[in-house]
Amino acid sequence: MNKPTNALITTGVIALLVVLSAIAWYKTGNKAETSSQSEAAEDKVAVAGDEKGPHGGRLYRDGDFAAEVKIFEEGVEPHLRVYGYFKDKPLKPEEISANIFVKRLDAEQNIEFEPESDYLIGNEIVYEPHSFLMVINVDYQGKKHTWKWDTKEGRVTMLDSSIKSSGLELLKVEPMMFENALELKGELKFPDNFESFITPKASGTLIKTYRSIGDKVNQGDLLAIVQSQDLIRLNAERSIAIDNLQFSRKKMEQERVLFQKRVSPEIDYINAKREFEDAQTRANELNSLISSYGGAGNGTIEVRAAMSGTILQVLGAVGSNVTPSSPLFKIANTTQLLAVVNVPADQLDALNPNNKVTVKPQTQTGTQEALGHIKYISDVIDPKTRTAQVFIEIPNQFRWRSGQLITAEIFENQSMKPMVVREDALQNFRDWDVVFIRVGNDFEARPLELGDKFNGYVEVKSGLKAGQVYAAGNSYLLKAELGKSGATHDH
Image (cartoon, rainbow, N blue to C red; front, side, top):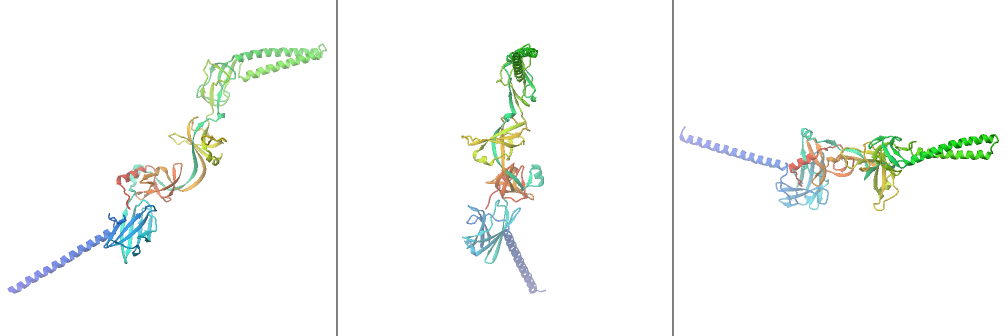
């Protein structure tokens, strides 16, 4: 092969290599550009960036077009507003159209828009918390632009094993019958006919007691003995009266025989009979008087229990002088109590003896609660407090005490509440009363509108759905987890 031929081949090879290199460079460049555009498109429909628009909303860009999405809630219910821009210049709302799909843990929304002022306004409320995956679709000049906004607010993830170890209690949102109650403070006392002060029937010296404080007694049980000079005198008078009775009886019999034999006139018999009757009356009077004193023939008086109950006080000391006005014992039947409460005058008309009433101590560690009924509503209103006393009769199965402070609830009517949660489930998150609902492994704080309270439960007017699972006991642990995560509120 000659030199010109070799030179030609060499030149051809070099040219081929140059062409192949150019083709390789072109393909590599195109591939990189395509990959970059694909990644940009992926970013475009992924979680939004941090760029803010002129109105403080989140700004999404696609080439020369941009859309600003804002949750507006200043003085109104939270709703979406969409602003359009082309080459960073505002567009009229009539030039664009939008649709936004919102997916939450337990619900979905498909929000349509219409022009208003310089923006598009959504037709649904975007309720709190603002925790959702939002797919944003905006059309401009026939081209659809799509982005995603994924935000988690007030959300905590917890597996079953962690729930069990933390002692978190899960309940369902359910209906419950509430009983509207008037809550009142008051005091316990024994009914007047359930306590008694025991006194001697006559003056004397207390020489013996048979019972002490705390003893249970039955009506008629012997409690004490009193030596009474009055009784000794009465016994002496009774002895004389008995002797006089026996004498007058004999005299009457004698006069009756003499009258029958026509020895004495009838008037003598009549007088003797009258003397006998007077003597009999006097003897009976003394017997009754001594018996009423509980006295014995030796001048002692038996002091007995006037009622069954418990001896609360022993007031007399052996050897002391006592009188009928000196109480020796205080006895009370402790099986019944009266709760005395003061009811405002304007609420008295709502009360009647058929109202259900519960009574519990103001300070207690257990769950003791007695069921009672209204015994009496006072007819007198205190001019200073403008209240009237209401007396509630309750059984004393818990061995409560007279003078103990109580809380009484007088129930006026019943109402069915469609949704209730337990009060200990409520936590404070930002400016809301919330409970944490559970969906899968996620718990999310839900702001609530609350209503009436009853027996440890609270009515939920809005914010939940019946049947949802929520965290009750130890729910404060979820709030603590939110604090650790540094949850923010971003619109």
